[in-house]
Amino acid sequence: MILNNKKKAVLCSALLAAFSFSNLALAVPAIALPSLMQEAEELARLPGGGWLTLDKHGLRLFNAAGQEQDRLAVRAKQLDTRIDANRVLAVFLEADTQRPLPVSVDVQAGKLNRLAPFPVPTFSVEASCLYRDAQQLDHLFLIGKDGQAEQWVMQGEQRSLVRKLALPPHAKHCRVDDGAQRLLVSEANMGVWAYDAESEGMGKREVVALRKPYGQLDGGAGALAVLPGGVAVLDGKAEKLHLVAHQGGNWTALPPQAVALNVRKGDSQLALDGNSLMLRGKSGWQVRPLKWAGQAEALPAVAFIAPQAQTVPMARQGDAADDPAIWLSSDPANARILGTNKKQGLLVYDLQGKQTQLLEVGRLNNVDVRQNISFGGSKVDLAVATQRDDNSMMLFIINASGDVAEAGRFPTGLKSIYGMCLYQPASGGVEAFINDKDGTFQQYRIGLSGKQFSATLLRSFKVATQPEGCVADDANARLFLGEETRGVWTTSADAAKPDALAMVLPVGAHLSADVEGMAIYRKPGGAPDTGYLIVSSQGDSSYVVLDAQAPYKVRGRFKVGFNLPAGIDGTSETDGLDVTSANLGGAYAQGMLVIQDGYKRLPDGPQNFKYVAWGEVAKALKLD
Image 1 (cartoon, rainbow, N blue to C red):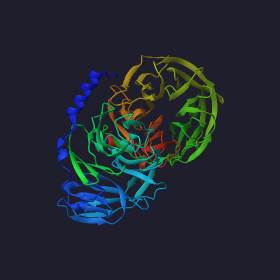
Image 2 (cartoon, rainbow, N blue to C red; image 1 turned 135 degrees about the vertical axis):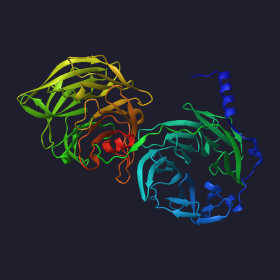
Image 3 (cartoon, one colour; image 1 turned 60 degrees about the vertical axis):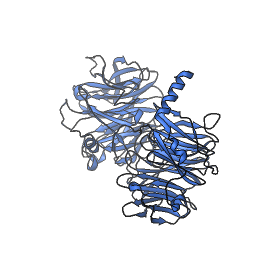
Image 4 (cartoon, one colour; image 1 turned 30 degrees about the vertical axis):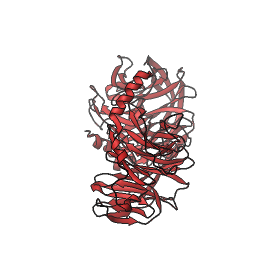
């Protein structure tokens, strides 16, 4: 949207009315703190009115009356805290080693309790800050002078590297807005940037404020503090204080106010105390009461499920893993997971995630499995996949031991073959739905004569835009298919009884484009009018569960988060998934959900697949 000068003036006036500094700040040169606390280089207000400070003597705990209660004698810098009703966590850097040292603050007892330290960083740290995620796990960002950066997570005594990042050089300050999951980084000679604090996904970067002539900051950016729905930042000269509001997905700067802290470049500090900003200059701390009408940002609440296991990473970097399928053995412990590698072929894994087979057959995209298929007098277990090198449909036989072998390939005539799913009619045999990026769907009947497979085209139809994921409900002869930017549709899976496409769930409140993997969960022996459809909502890395029959009631959404004791990260930007209700033992007594992970973290690595216990999903969403 382009604004003329008049509209800009109206918008600026509205923002000024909502977000402003109080002029009382100019008449209050320093916080009413005891002189010992005025020596603090960094500080944080604690519940009950006490203070936590960091100065040349170390980390110090004061009560509301200004009496020192405890102290950790250490040369330190870069203090950040997370405070809630149950606990206070502080983390700072030991100045000599730059090792991050976490401390638990017992406010009632007036004690500082050291926690297990983080490892000594492998680079010189200029900035550090805490982040508490939606799982209530505490993360620490470490940023080096040259732009090297790392994200760590802590739980109990465990300290684990989540990922490495590339952030701006000369970053001396950072803070995280937990609710918005936003990492704010102050680049000394340039400005303030916003990044995704969530490790899952590719992430993005936004400009918050820049130095002149690109923005309003004199000499770049200095200290910053998170405000509800915005950020406060000192310019590089520590002469002006800037407030920047985040509204409607955009950053809007208010007119700056002079502060003249008279400090060396990079030595300024900011801290938020309720409705006041605290600024540290050469003569100590001063307070600036704020009239700030911004609202804290928060993403919609969603249940988190921890994965039970993961497969070994792909042997190819980048966008490689795509779609899984589950094969069941007569011995549940010997079940197999088939997974496609878009740069290599078909992989087979056991229930512990160990790779048991690799078939280097080219760029496979989607795969599906059906078992005990009747072909005349024989029973066959079959996997079918789309092959993007030659736009063919590939068939694989699976023997009783779970070994997979290529059994044939058939040209489709499609120009950009993409997704697929299998349908096992009640009358016997098996059929395959294949789609193209242009929206075309083809339905084939697969036959077997002797040892020779065949594929016969039954029908074609088309959706308006690009599809990929689909799943057939064998019990009800229904096909569910995803049009990536529009939503989930359904139609008859019976080629002899076609019907019009009907929208099941549009992209919107519950579903975020792209619409990707799909699977149907139905309890063993469950009636045809029961069951759940699980859909990958790739745009927000969540999964939607809805009834697999009209009126397709949405039962809830969930995300897959960290399982730190097992060293497994969550999932993000999922392409394909599959589910079974079979009792596979242990955590999988109610079945298993297998999910492709678009970004492997904890630590970084090639893509893989995650195993999730269906019982945990059912419990979180209160499913039958």
